[in-house]
Length: 241
Length: 257
Image (tube, rainbow over all chains, first blue to last red; front, side):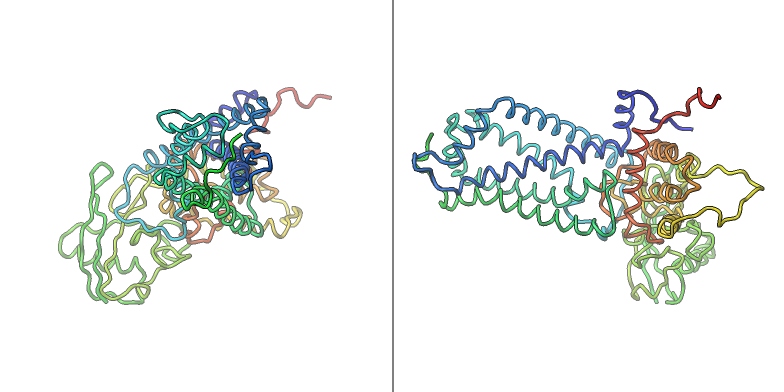
């Protein structure tokens, strides 16, 4: 008879993660955390469309200053997100190698998908694009590394955003990456419930529709910012802190 | 009707194999797909060639022996059926077809379209059973089963173990099969004593056989000849997650008094 998951908390966590279902559960929970962050982040970004305050401070700069004024919260969130990204990434790579290399070493001469969506079949590739995009995005607008964003000025969120996205190549890259993110979430949002064992013939179809709507909202919400900068709808103002 | 068949020919488990093209005339639209292959094999035998090997038994769509890919779809273009119950009227005259065996590391090709599905048997042996004393069966009506549980268990038990789910899955995952087997017994009172151990052991065996993981794509459900639902995979996940954290080995210091 095969091995069983019996033992203390640590052994249990380890053998749970060893199983494919455990890895998927980890991906679901970390995916949920990252999805929550993406929603909040989008809401934060959309403040770019708000008018400048009477004192000349842009609401986006005010928001950024408020976040930086709470280091424990900011760094707590960053650490949680970093751990979530690492777990989500590592589990995805491990499962993908099992699925693509080990489980089917010889490919079909012909294989015709019937019901699966483009989104569901490209989760790993979309995930990798998002991963590299996030690294670039952190260097570009969070850390403001000189070699990525020479015009970056610490604390000037609105100005950095506008000047960063006025480069059409950068803006288009941002939009493509966010469309990839939306496609990833189109399958990912409902999929995390299935991975955790939450499914019901009455609610799962609704859940699928909700995740499609949320994917569109996130795609449009994030793309609207680079698009607005690119078309000149959002431009440099005196809105410096 | 006339058909062009590209069939995967492979001498044995260790040889490489490849597609071989055959032209077959005189196919009757009322033939089943396997009867069509019987005709081809008769012609090949008469010519002194090696006939195409494929697995089959009942030819009524209930034993789970037959199955291969037709144009990249497990059990072919007609939904909810096995290849033995797939009739030639679903194909056009002069159509070109591609026949391939199930492909998965856990299902080695033995010859042509025949694969070894013993991995499924080992998964069943790991936990797809209940322990009862034989010879003293009680009256069936003494165990009350909720109607909807009986229905769901029956739907899961419809799985014939053909392997189409594994074949259609881009990850070669056996989740629908294992999900059906775990669900079938977890839903019934008779399956309760071994419920946690069953989930843990069957999933562990599934992994040992090197089946892939589930990415909730749904191709398995689409090709299943018995209409086994994706919901069963969610139930397997639920059963496994619960068992992995809550299961306790039987305590040695029980009883007394």
